[in-house]
Image (cartoon, rainbow, N blue to C red; front, side, top):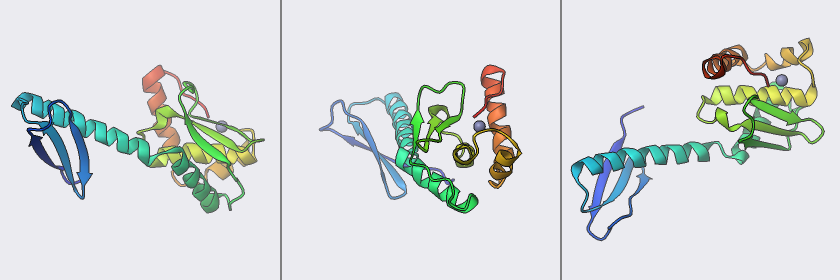
Length: 171
Ligand SMILES: [Zn+2]
């Protein structure tokens, strides 16, 4: 990633409000005129973080998740898993993902947000396979392994939960 180009614009008309937006490959931060240099620096950092967080959320909206799930199903499961909804949930502290095969709905723990896309894809893939095979038997894993980074993603998640709680988590 090239370093961000940030342009700070101060406006005498702004008294309190600070805002930031992307303009092509530049990021514009609007600040009130009266801020000290130290405050300016802090605000610029804060606004860049906020903007990045907002973009991250937008990048993985529930609709995006459903699109990705459909794509994964087409690519690796011959389109046989047909999810009806895929959404983020905040109340899954001990599982990365879960599903209800009868309704073809998939839920992903919000803790996956901010993880690499291929890790999120792995959890989606895992749940998609559950729509076809409920238990973790050989048939289940054979399908999951069609996702090329399955093993790497499992290692990533195990490492993550070992670091966080000292124990691995299941999907
Ligand atoms: Zn599972």
